[in-house]
Length: 123
Image 1 (cartoon, rainbow, N blue to C red):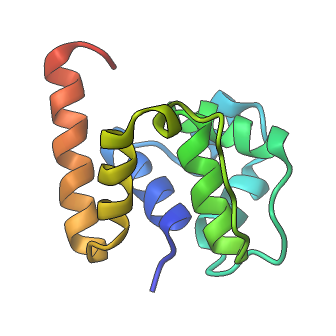
Image 2: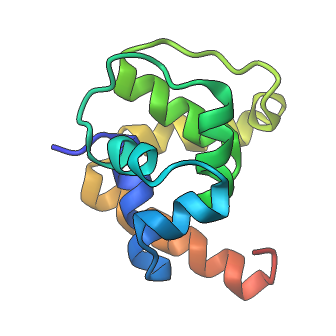
Image 3: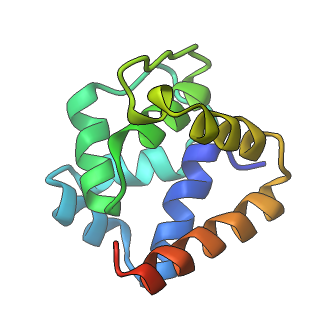
């Protein structure tokens, strides 16, 4: 069963028709790093912040969700008190609720959010 980081990467690859090389090039990290993060069910350790920033840049998403997903894949508890959603209780509730959904339902929510962002022109 894929972890959240794997699902996040796969979703963006499928959505945009990207390869690991595309994400690596966009993020300034190695293809092997993207491949490892996309295929490892459990990470031996938490990736470095610069790696996660590069992955987020390559995927075109904020770094905070990438950090949370990587922490989960590494079995690390991560508290991002300075993350924007920490200041907005409604966003925090949404994020906590999404984590309770099945992988299939999370993919549906991700597609919905992507379509709303595209329709709003904020992407």
